Image (cartoon, rainbow, N blue to C red; front, top):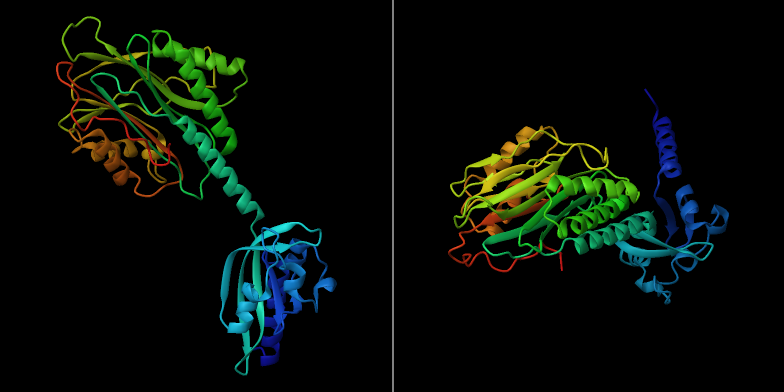
Length: 399
């Protein structure tokens, strides 16, 4: 059994080990704000050797100007407030000035030390926020890029197209989810959805390039979607857009053989993407499962196939990305079954309400992946679209 002296020595050793190895900078200041001790991380972050800091006024040494370069009065300094009030002060938007004159954004907490009822000093723990701020700026730039590409869908006669995009949580990186919808010169409606493999700036850039290629190549011809996806894949290879992506391209056109109002054909091709979902007004739905074709970016000469189904009045086509259905610990079939269950009472709901409810049920909080959804509902040609099928409302954050 250790003696009290041994226990104290052991505690001091641990304390010194923590001070020497913790990533945060730590200062011990006396009652006048002078440096009594400084740990290695504080030396590394500020660039001042230990011997140049001890006994110096910390505010005058490191904290003398605000982020904009204007003078920082001592009485407004959070460390000085902790010393004068005896209360812990937290500040998450401060700047320390390095020995080389560079500004270091920091978040700090100042905890007063009290002896015999009076404040005898303060312990200051601070964290270098340089990388965190840089990552936040990059994420904001990527989100702006992504949102700039999420244009409003068209409003063709007797079809209502509604889209939603929900970004991943703040702690996750920007992904490569995208959608598109536009009219061809012959009046057919094109809808697409895709997901570039990966996250961050490379995925966002590749997403923009692939979406642009697909839109350009699909616009002015009536070739089947499979042929367009093949051309997109070949163009991407030729232009060195080296990425892997899943995608669906679909074309909704008049039925060529049945001159009955309201009959339309949905023709689509899938490059390894989740199957489309066809929702009936009574809430029943079916997955348009097809033999899988390869992702984009694998083999530009791979065989791609088209698939055809009628799109009847009142029926809703949904294209989604995997962020809506995939969950850790669950397989894809479970996720798709959960999606169909969530749709079971939404077959006749207005599309805006349908998609908002679907997101609330399946992704109530932003998850680790983006979510994109495109919904298309067919209406009879002999009557106008109902009032709820009015001008499209863009997803939150998309101008």
